[in-house]
Image: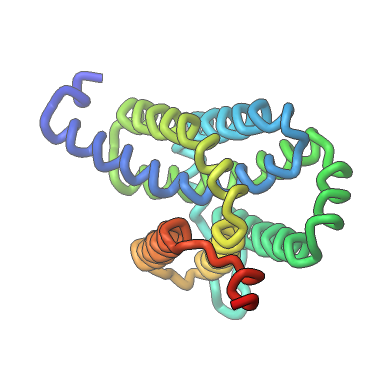
Length: 245
């Protein structure tokens, strides 16, 4: 822990914490969308368990660094392309995320009545199971990135705990904001589609700069935020009064 008190240790810690927070945004969005399908009284519990499980998975992976490093070793080749455990996890997780995002968009476009019927049919255990599966995928990629940035495991653990704490504090606000604005929810689902596609490509060793992906996400959110603000400021027009004139 003494390394954390050095200048280089503090720089690494701050950099890793910020990176973990940014990489955790897609995790929060996915949890928020899944939890929104639960009854209102179960949603806070679902968010707490979902983010808590994400923290547990990340810490477990940190303590299994020796195995995690070997997970990048090739298991077999497909068309002269080496495939490792990491690749299989990323491909499987990406395809699952593509499926879930497409399903959620389908339910959203079907209309509120159909969507409400579907919400009632979703069980708490099925939502938590889906959160666990995606927590593993997001955590796997996040921790591998952390290993490349920092050598000290305790710096990694403290950074992960703080980033998860920030996620927990922000999760409710993000969930409410997404549910309150349907266009933002559709935008979030589109982001998850994009991230799922990116994970599949990463599994096949096609590397896309994460900075470009997250820049596009934040820029789109910024534009949507401006649209929301503009709609609030626009004066409401009474069409009946307008046509009477």
